[in-house]
Length: 126
Image 1 (cartoon, helix red, strand yellow):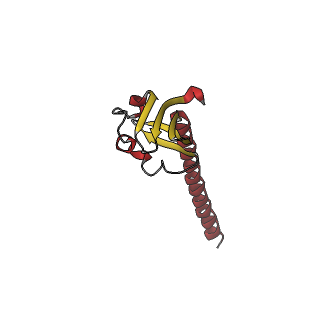
Image 2: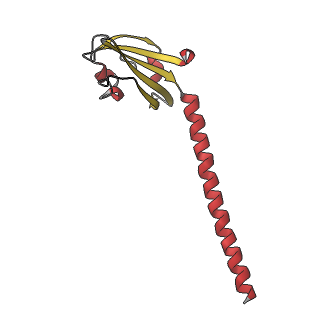
Image 3: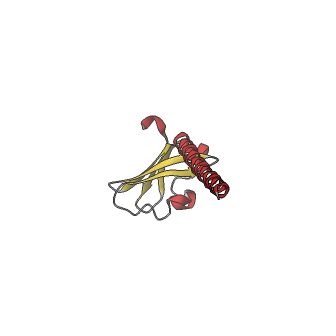
């Protein structure tokens, strides 16, 4: 997973940004400022920083067509937010979902055609 880490944020207990690293601009986070409240800078973290345990948020879409998996890790008096690029995985999941939807539609249409065919055959036999 270390190869996919694109951003880390270090946040203190008062929810102010202490440090950050990576390429946040690639994910729509262009205004990160140390010492400022992180919620004002990364709005999707609102309400997520108070849990005393690790939280994982899969497939959070940020920026333009980018998706990250977010790990919120409380350590001592700080909170680390690690963001891993999962854009490719998200795209693959969407393609698989669309294929499943297409298959369901085709199956439904096929069953409708078979019903009409059976009905037509039954009507001829009368």
